[in-house]
Image (cartoon, rainbow, N blue to C red):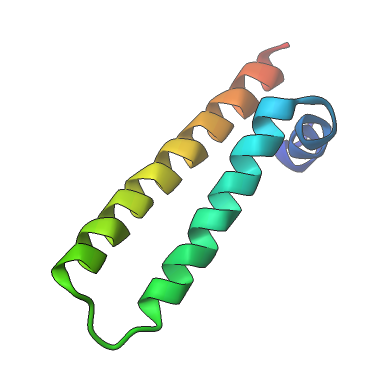
Length: 72
């Protein structure tokens, strides 16, 4: 089974995957908004790094779910 098919199945059948994907997308949009600013305050820089780490954690968890599903 191809990865795209697995992702589609997980979106439809796995609530955790769906929630992770939605949160990842929300964080991506937030980062895009932050990146539009010419200058960031120190607090904004810290928030940006925090969001990047969270986004990566969600992406890693989604990848793990895909790998686990592909082993079935």
